[in-house]
Amino acid sequence: MKRGLWELQQREQEKWLDALGEVGEALREWRAAIVTDLGGEESLSAMELAIVDTIVRSHLILSSVDRYLLSIPSVVNRQKHELFAVVLQRDTLANSIARNLERLGLERRAKALPSIQEYMAGKDAEKVTAAKPPAPHAEP
Image (cartoon, rainbow, N blue to C red; front, side, top):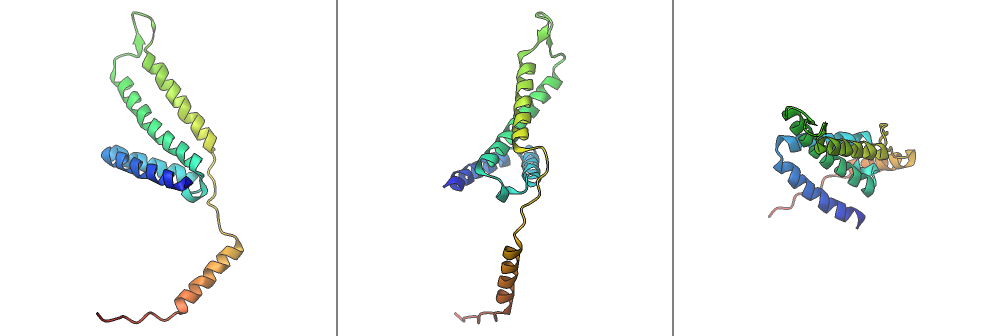
């Protein structure tokens, strides 16, 4: 059940990323890089995967805000002598992404390897499968 809901959400996210075209593809690649750095999807809990997905969506919003801020002549409201509110909101969003990345860990994790017993059992299974003669083809 835990993975079932996550898989449904993942399919929805895939549709949404597809709709973004090249930007969606870049976000998908960035997500894959994060997951790989964390040891692979199979080593992450559902909660960790939810944090990764939140980071990806937040990164899209942050990039949009950055693009907007870089397009305006100044980030300072000259009448009030203060930063526009969007600058502070952008900082809050960037800090949120940083906190979530810290929750996941900033170090690369090695992918979990099977124990020697699991590895040998897999090799034995491969030998048995390879030794079986191919099944005869039934004619229609």
